[in-house]
Length: 340
Image (cartoon, rainbow, N blue to C red; front, side, top):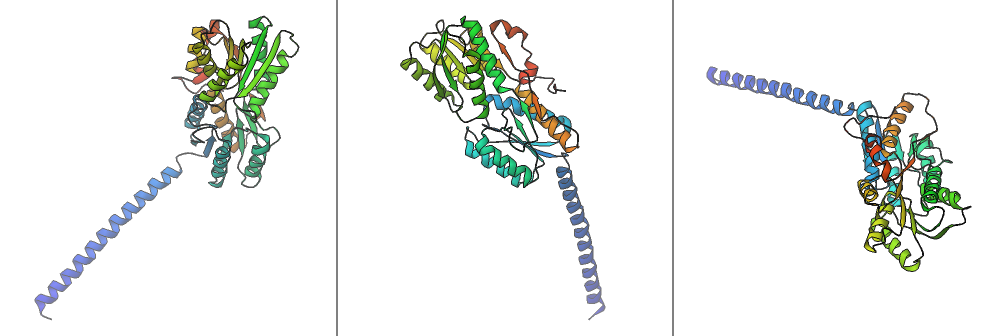
């Protein structure tokens, strides 16, 4: 090998080694940058919670979600909001199963049905070791750690007492309820029945279920008025029932003849109360439920004592009460974090 060739050969090796060094150096920088980025992502929240809703786009559950997300932001935790697009108990149960299988730190959900939800909640708590807090609807005989939400029997009782007062104890009542199997709906109907059972002038003529559907609630209201023309009062136990009943009553131009008491305070409900189509509604605090469920779960993670049951406030409001509504507490607002 000539001196010139040997020199070129050595220079080639040096260039190769230098290029390898640069490649290793920059490769290490990129790798460590990605690793740090991934680590930051993992460490973004102290805990990973899942809120499993009955129905993703339900306006009431969006308020629960809003409260939960405000608490998640305040306490530095990751929160997923998941559930079926439309109310479906099988999909709801599968979503809880999937959340448990992904080994999240905590699950918040409704305890819709003792028969179906109790064994699943028990399995999530016992087999997966994941705490469950029920929100809005309780399964008292399950291994859930705590419940936060309305005392649904009391809420139904309040609705019954309001109807007695507003109709002077004389009404032929039809009830449209979200469904016949959900614990909270059962309790709202039971409380109402107990409130009116000893009033001679109050007669419950029909009870139908809406399946948490605007269309179905309207269909049932129309059907009831066709089959029972004597009905002059309605009680709707879910957020969508009252506003759907109101649409049918308006269609039939019976706004002045039929009394309606609903549940919750969606924008449409407020509008119907202002018009006088809905006479009263039972107000819950979904934002507070969502916020409180995340706060309780964080406290549980930190080994703090949490009460087994927290009943959020419930009240009946009428048109005269609208000006006193604290929208912050109902659906939150610019000063989101409210509950203590």
